[in-house]
Length: 261
Image 1 (cartoon, helix red, strand yellow):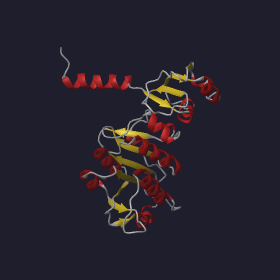
Image 2 (cartoon, helix red, strand yellow):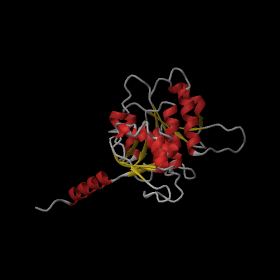
Image 3 (cartoon, helix red, strand yellow):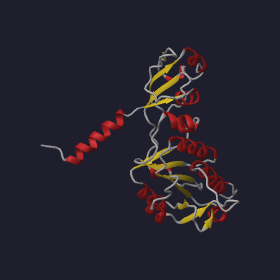
Image 4 (tube, one colour):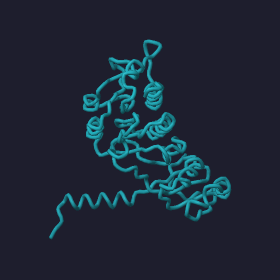
């Protein structure tokens, strides 16, 4: 009996996902991945100098390093990647299901939702801020978002190994699921009627998800409609704008500095 098309497509997607690997590069990113027991590691390529500098992390990683000539580094990286003589092939991390990862519990968690933020450097910086300010997770749609890459991991400076980065099938559906779980969705928009500093005290002690859009287009129409509040970050002059990663850091700080939150 011939399998239905949807079954074949599901099996194909599952095989493709299982085959997907990522090359991490740079001493910091590689060291943190080597020391992460949840990270599935496949191949480690290092120069002799890099191997010496990673001597604290390699023995417990469970794989034998390949010593490479620094002039002929045998790893498929983009030209210009500053690998520092270290590259590690890994499987993407599995952070589990949205409902399990973001369950409010007894705390008042903070989440970051990214609406089509595709620049890996921006996402890496956002992961760093999320870790610093104790966000529960960073969530993005699986399509039109930055996947795990070496560039993202290098910018995240180790946060990719510790800060949950969950990519979901549909961001709007995830937002509605979070609302059912008790989250208040706060969208960042330059024309927002509320100022984030004014709203933050009202949300103390409640689960909050901050929603940021790509630079330029900002939040999509459906994303805006699903937000409970649209807020802006106040600027000193008549004109002001922040890079999305900077806006993420400022908004997270505003939502976590209140001791009651």
